[in-house]
Image 1 (cartoon, rainbow, N blue to C red):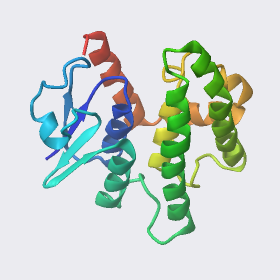
Image 2 (image 1 turned 90 degrees about the vertical axis):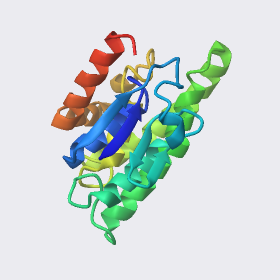
Image 3 (image 1 turned 120 degrees about the vertical axis):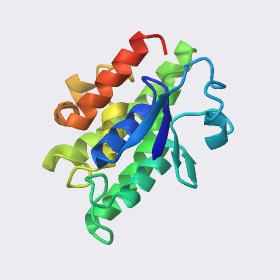
Image 4 (image 1 turned 45 degrees about the vertical axis):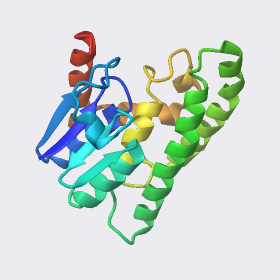
Length: 202
């Protein structure tokens, strides 16, 4: 049985939605936001107590991108990754890396407490979103077919992830992509669970 350690409303949402996309059975363990020592098993998967963290047999993984890539390989029949050796698979790898190293990084810099530093980081974030907007001009999904890369972009473009940034008004393709991914049953189920657990104080 796969176990996913998660904190509601964090990047864990992407790994959770990806697992739901596979249709495989798994256990979701929601970790208290301010107490990463409970459950103690989390630090056996990631000694830092970071989430998402995935336990899959002898495989122990943290880092959202690594979990997504692993699940795409582990469940080749799922929609998480295009077929190996195809141009679409190569594009999927590129987008997972870009979204993690460039867009997620730029997003984190806009969320710091220092308002001056946050404002200075916004142009780089908008430039990353501009690249995604251009890529979606002639396709519904980043790599061609739907993939885990779209789950990652869905989170990073979410209004709850980047409050105060009027992204969709200036990026209509991103707005359409976000709405499209939001309708997926796995994403809807994940969102309901995380909203419930976040409201419960986790």
